[in-house]
Length: 388
Image (tube, rainbow, N blue to C red; front, side, top):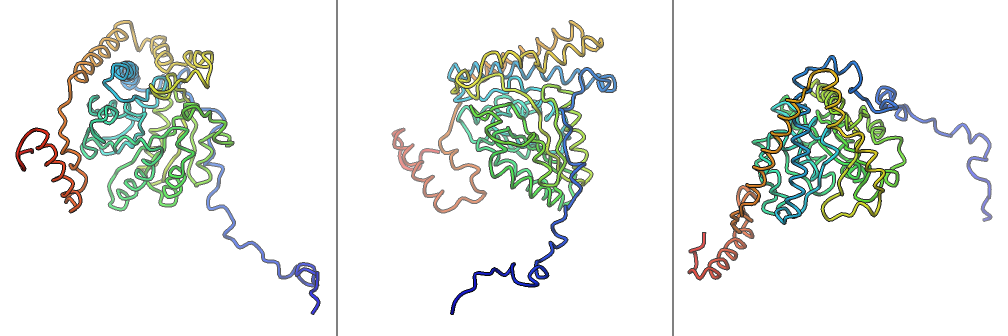
């Protein structure tokens, strides 16, 4: 039988059978309120400074100065062999400090590997914050005690964890918000998209802070995304996107404060993009001169977060020479203490490899622990069972 070349669509009356899109195609929410502003929000140089608490402004300044010195000292310790690696956040201190100060005691911080300063500003012991980067432990502190998740070296894996914790807290009726930090490079990871989708669907009390420092190691932002901004990505998941000047400490604090308050009210997550710049190399193992110019770096130095806030506060009479000197002296004291403690040789026990893996060790772990204990005893010239 000869097949007809006429398609179904060409047959008489075919148009009547074409399906009409069902109501499900319609937007779940109005996208207009979710869109970020065209330009990053700024507070310094505006009336927002006059309305801000002077105590908060001075605390932001003091923490910025401490943070800059902390970054410089940690970088020096890396060069001296006291740290295996250090990803500096110099130039990004406003994001780090604001993220730490905006949190309530019961809230959780989910940092990436570059966010040691945020953990320290949150109250974590600086040496404990650097333990991972020293290579001693996977995490040098108790996350539950400090409400700080382990520093995450894999990109963006901390984001689904933040959503899970926030969602669980909401189910239990706990007043807890999770603040998850990630870099612009992390937004190209699958974990980023999964976290935002689950957070929006569940209306989880979580805030995502993207520190857009311009580069994912050597890859500039333009080679990662064609979106108008990273904040615009929020709309596709059904949450608000906010764009903020990441070197304006008061602006970052204000935007994060509003986002956390919104989450705590049960109104769901927010994606905040802070536009900043990584002044130092990606880590001490990176040569940033191979992919960016010195002129570009100097342009951003003129938009330094400490300089911006210091100028604003001195012009308004909130900060004087004494305050500037005291902040610098406090930073030097912190750096000296950090040097002294990091220069002390750590006392490490190889058996700690089996600590905090499982509450109840598996048979395989018990077997491996016994094997290592026997090897240590043999090296020490001890009899079986004598090594601890």
